[in-house]
Amino acid sequence: MATADVIDSEPLAFSDAAANKVKDLIAAEGNSNLKLRVFVQGGGCSGFQYGFAFEEAVQEGDTVVEKNGVKLIIDPMSFQYLMGAEIDFTENLQGAQFIIRNPNASTTCGCGSSFSV
Image (cartoon, rainbow, N blue to C red; front, side, top):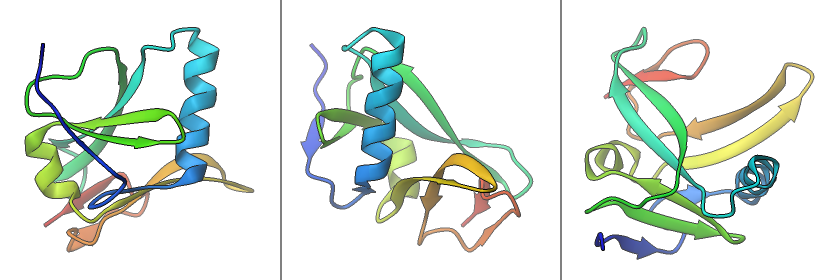
């Protein structure tokens, strides 16, 4: 069994809107074992980019943030870039999207999906 650190929504904020949207997406998938993995990888126009994926398993060293019955998982490498960030979901005239407000980012691209530190 993998060891993971389970924490409250601090030092990473997971908004009610984001948790509720993830809950809806998991229900649509029909698999209550799914968790949302948020990760940072190289690439994008600013150097790093955010990624999201559904997974069932928590890996060794992952941090788990729980909100409204939803689990968000972050690997140790990504967590260092996401510490203090807020993961939110917004729906407006421009569309619906997950947003990461990251205080560690020194610059971001216009679409908000990539950043540099």
